[in-house]
Length: 149
Image (tube, rainbow, N blue to C red; front, side, top):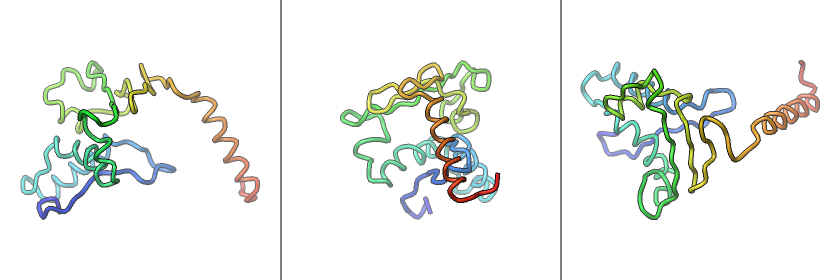
């Protein structure tokens, strides 16, 4: 489809019971492509990162606002610790992101210029409160539905 010029992107749309891990999604797509086509139709590591970033933003209609580091767009950044043992020393950055990176390597997240996570800790929300409120909401739903424990 990519070779035919079909606009594509990589997304995760079911996060309630599956891990929302873009690194694993890029890795899985790379592996499936490699096993299916070998070196024919090879998707590069850079292309996989583009599918997960700018192409996703473009497909959602937000390509003019997010998805790449471009003057005039929102300052959305994900900073990865390349000193972690599974990444160091980094040879080729795109390869490291797709083949080696894990969510645990994410150090800082900046959305629209606001730091939401730093040093692997949330800065803009109370994680314990969010989990407690979500747990209470689930318990309430289960009780109203008379769902077995």
